[in-house]
Image 1 (cartoon, rainbow, N blue to C red):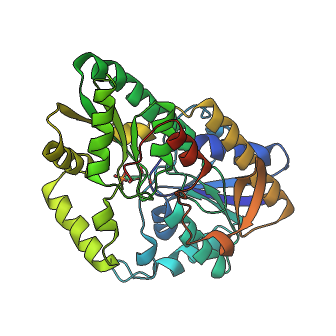
Image 2 (cartoon, rainbow, N blue to C red):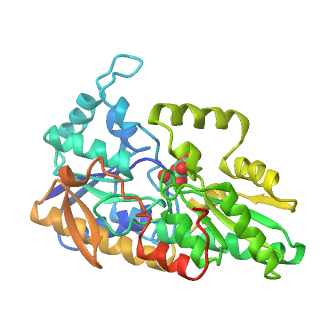
Length: 359
Ligand code: F6P
């Protein structure tokens, strides 16, 4: 007999349901008795005791369904130790819910912040497993997060669509891609979509270099240019500022521009006398069905988590390293960000074929 709790926390993505299905089917098929409790809206459900018992049936037919059947919310890690508006100790409340339900393990699906809280609960003595979710692919200790490839597909489709219209009108197009503070999504979608310029936070840009790359294309008779720009892209000048000043500067930009694409447009207008347009696929990148790659990845990770629960092994993130499923101790990975190295093979490959990074 096992009792497990499930929760999905942070921004959603396409393969949350597929991953939970992997966990639960992996347990139901190998145990005579299992109780599964699903917490509503992430850690909020665990804090306030909002949960429901789920049956095997609840996990049928959800492999292809995007979003999360449990709901999700953002509960910032840095506020976890701060009592809520009624003075409730959130960490204590989560522990109480866990003990009340006599859980053997809490399976937590989420990104970096979610993982930090999972590690905190582990330190508090709870049995936890973390499954790495995010379209940003920025979780340290796993080569791949579920959701990422589905988002790459959508962002690539967006760039593909822009190609035809950009070419017809001989325009410069800025396609802004999600990814939070890292450039994985933009790098992959940019290459897959044949973008001419890729801007990512890890490689700060020089606007003059970008303008030069556009001019070079025009000189070569290519009347249009597509820029795949990460939402966290930053200029060389800003990146060189001390941390505090940089933060202030970025806050100032937020008051002037709706997002980085608009700042870049304004900067490029000073350099080029060309028609510039902006496209932002936004949350579309997190929506819809998981792609086949993610369905397989989620099944592998979910099923591996079930395997650990069956053996009573807790305190890990279940990730993928060099193509193999790997359990990574939470104390090793929590709080670390996986960024794109400026000399990553993929960056080098892109540069070799003439893609500019504006550096
Ligand atoms: O972490 C996933 C992500 O989609 C980021 O790429 C993006 O910066 C952020 O979430 C958007 O968050 P929200 O859905 O809260 O606007």
